[in-house]
Length: 225
Image (cartoon, rainbow, N blue to C red; front, side, top):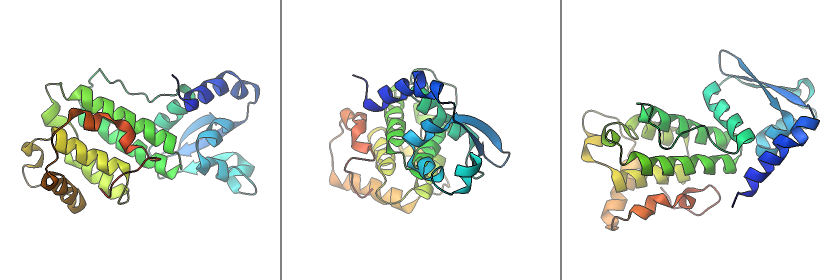
């Protein structure tokens, strides 16, 4: 059954967005890539945009929102989700750079936090979980999935208790190989602590553990990791 958020997105795509042409210019990144997006769409799925476009704020008067510090590719992922109800990632196809895809997803999750959009963050979690399941059978899984640069990004841009941190730790615990930590690498101390706690707890491996994406939703309960 389709979630309410998907139904809302499709109804607006067919109806209100067509009838009410209230476009909004969004300038993203240092190179100022411009996106033209329906105002109602952004306000529906992001309290950040809703507040920015309300009252006497400059953005509300000029109909332009500046996001100079954000990645245009990440913003494009959010816009795609708003209009299509899904993220632009293929679960079954491999581009050859699995780690880069996980980095994009990590950035999208962090961006969702800035937008105050837990629905978007939860959809990112769904994709990470599904990709980890599919990529586990890929021949380059051990060499290229969830590189330490992704781990460092997640721990460098999220707070303690963030569900994405827990998901990263669980993926390493369930699927990881000691070669992932070989060499002179900078490993975040909170990550190694959380990973060690998992091992000390002696939890039995269960492939369904990571596959239950709802455990990592922003609206759900999660541990200190």
